[in-house]
Length: 489
Length: 108
Image 1 (cartoon, rainbow over the protein chains, first blue to last red):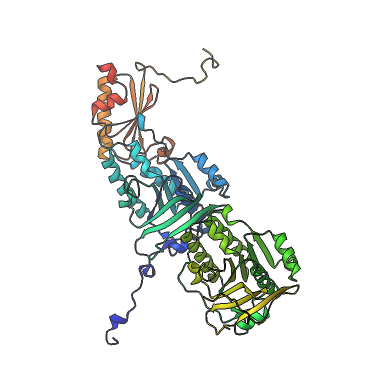
Image 2 (tube, one colour):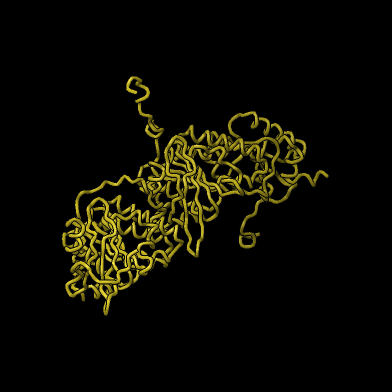
């Protein structure tokens, strides 16, 4: 209705109306929260014991100091200061140095329940003063209280304590510090003593589960007042560089779509794809039965990228680098040359060795470090043995998504049996832009390798079934297959 | 007695000896004043002539809150005799203060 100005006024999300955020600097978390934690307000981070909340809180503080020039105060109600310091040394956080530089105060509030008698009215003014002094000492902008509910063990009068905690959170807001308050998960409540009631701006829930011997940590933004946020559970890792929440660019389907084509490395296959190959930044799946040259196609795909002067990563889940290089040399693909030239990098790893999430994070780290134009994963069917199907599908979704968001053209191979050639990858089929099926076809007195393009989005691809050969010159398609015995659906 | 036989140079544990009490407050709040008045009364009754009370105002010395492990206000700390005892609150519940200071047994 053009007549009513109000109606066409766009409704601005709260975030754009000035809700300011404090970036955490924690990989992935700022994406999930749309930019960080609410600036100048308390955030509750809760979860069961050992879920990583102390570390997450500490990293928030450390990155505040190292990346955003915001000094911090860490108040520990549980762990002794020296243990805290030691625990994060392995992550490269030098808390001692930060304290010496006047950028950080680590204060352990030592509570001694059995020695304390209570007589008459009291309040937590001592803690307020103590915290205030620490904040003023370094000009802190960030504060962590870990885990404040420990106070309930030290003071029997829960009513006073609740009133005081409520006052504390108001006071923190007045101070304008961005605070992280940790809490241990209670029975049916987010925290043991229900302090989520007082910290209402932002609540992040961490979890730690073991599934089929694989442990996975997860993070969820339960609540973020006045801001849009991702509502999924996001896996996260505690790695060499601290916490990393796995992206997350997730599934917003806002990838730029490139018109540029990338060769598959096989001229005749490119020909089937309108003569130009696949779109840059798209994902290609080659599924086929054993011995149909899937790895060769992956290798050829990588080699073609290197020939163009692009970088490529070959993730191998079954074979070693030496084995692949040797095998490919026998079909005329010289991978060693590209490795030497620094354009090709191998990463050989068995998915089951790491948890799925660790696996995904590792791959993303490598991709982020090497910044390749193309990535091959051979074969992703192995990943399906490493976890539950839904989880694997979710993980692959994020992987594909991550690669797309970086504009990386990805080629996945998948091993399957003849019967389920087109069924087995249903979980990920929707993510795939170009899907190529390779199989052995039997006919009177022989077997032949055939290949066809099942789908290729955005182009008028060929529907022919082509014979192909693996020779000393690599893999090339030959004629159109006219034999008998191809198992049509 | 030499340093080697008594390395800690231990403070007095004698409840009949001198008492040193420290009361942590935050400014001249009602609770602070009440606590001091209650403490004074109690000491006059039970420890007459052998006690000293030191008042620490954390608003003036905020860093002492951390140094002396103070969270709640008011906090009374019995420094002598040893061991150290802490009592929090405005000390209006005399029985509790007596128990906390271990003066109760003496009275009964």
